[in-house]
Image (tube, rainbow, N blue to C red):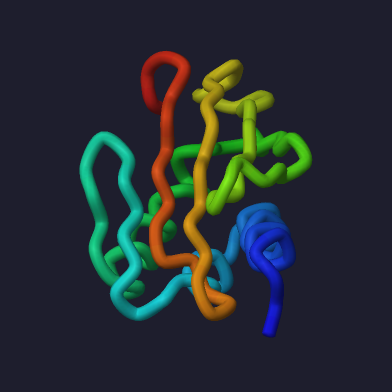
Length: 112
């Protein structure tokens, strides 16, 4: 079974791939993604991820190295280029049994 940091690193690699199905693959069936609204279940999360490539435009996400914060894995990020240039935040992941069960996004300002 993959450890927490490996699961999150795999997810970040999927985000860089731009493939929404790959982005959602590391989530449990009943996972929750909390942004300004919540997405419940892998299918809803995959639906959200289908919007990400268009919203990024020609920008990309620069991730800091994932770090452990108690039971969570935290990743700071910044958007570079594209319509969301400069948008930043921290994602905190709860991982159980090799899957993301909850991701909470804390934005430093407005969303992209």
